[in-house]
Image (cartoon, rainbow, N blue to C red; front, side, top):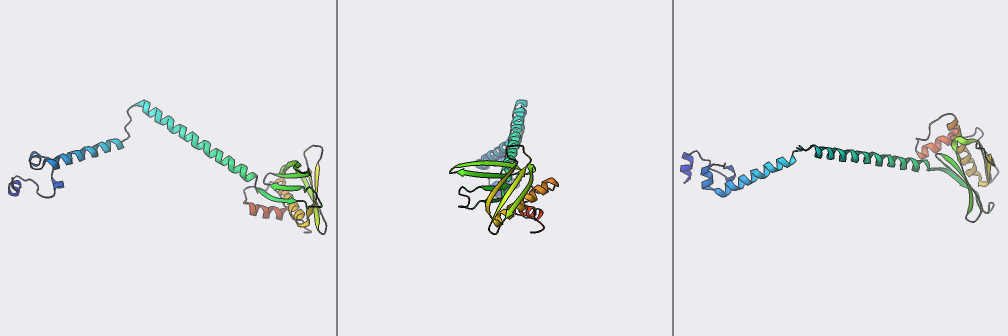
Length: 216
């Protein structure tokens, strides 16, 4: 069969991909017909795979349970991340000062973070007494300063063997700075001024301003 016969029988002439399946084409180019038939089968099978057709209720229940378990795990992980973030933020140091050696042979120290004041009193090598006082439990803080050194006294509402703690031989500027920040935090707490959400630098500046004495 030549092209003229194909035209007379209304058969397409052109590229192999333009042929459609018919007995004439099959007898004319069987390899093209087989290839196109195989391609159509692959396409149909691919469409079938892409469809989410679950007729089995057991499969649907299993998938639902897996999705629910995944959601619970994600919420649990998010909660743990938030908890770790809160703990890390609460332990962020805002101010610290250490007594001057050798005037204090085993230097004591005072550290303020976002939730508490920690006093570390050292009496010997690798020996220390650590006292932690929540900000809300601090009644008052005072300082005494000289030309070079200063001291800090913290009064606590907690009933114990001591209701106030004094640490001596800070550098003068460290004693004043620590007193201002702690006093500012106590004032903010007693007046219900929310400062815990502030970034570290902004929080320190705010507390220092609140606790600043009128006489400097």
